[in-house]
Amino acid sequence: MVNKLKLEELNRIDVETFKKVEKIPLVVVLDNIRSMHNVGATFRTADAFLVQKIILCGITPQPPHREIHKAALGATESVDWSYENDINVTINDLKSRGFEVVGIEQTTNSTMITDFKIDNTKKYAVILGNEVEGISDEALQNIDSFIEIPQLGTKHSLNVSVCGGIVMWEFAKALK
Figure 1 (spheres, rainbow, N blue to C red):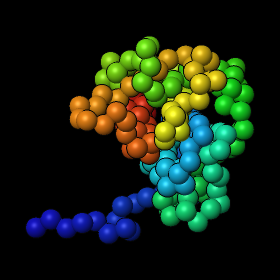
Figure 2: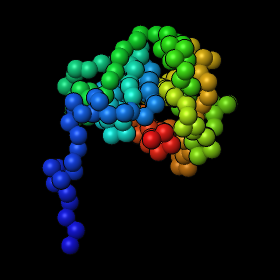
Figure 3: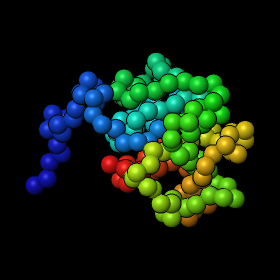
Figure 4: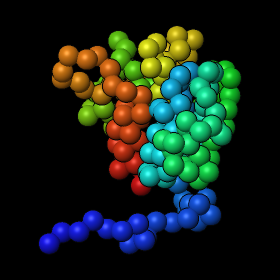
């Protein structure tokens, strides 16, 4: 017979321990995200995969907020985060600290995620854009490369938090 594991059987670390654990060299940048659910879900996924940090930009809502907390389930306390109004200030800062900046966007220069080679000797920052407009136009020319997630159905995009989960998992597998 199969039984689900109880919470105490999962042996999860506490927030204090999480803060001390080595993170993968990945920063997630949320560019003008409108939905607090998407922000909270991104925090929760970043916690699951030991992402180094989340940077909230533009109109992206910031914790603490009840709606973010509902999806994050406490991950806003474990995952380091900061806010910067201007996405290009964030991109330039990340580049100056040696990060390769990767936009998750359908562009004329995007590479399918299945073909993108993640180098485990590098540090990466991935940018997830607005639910309707995508990554800000003013940021596009400042990004090093673009990844696209293949979609085989009738829709042309995925929910931001779903997209973020796929991308974070791919980078976590390669960078751990």
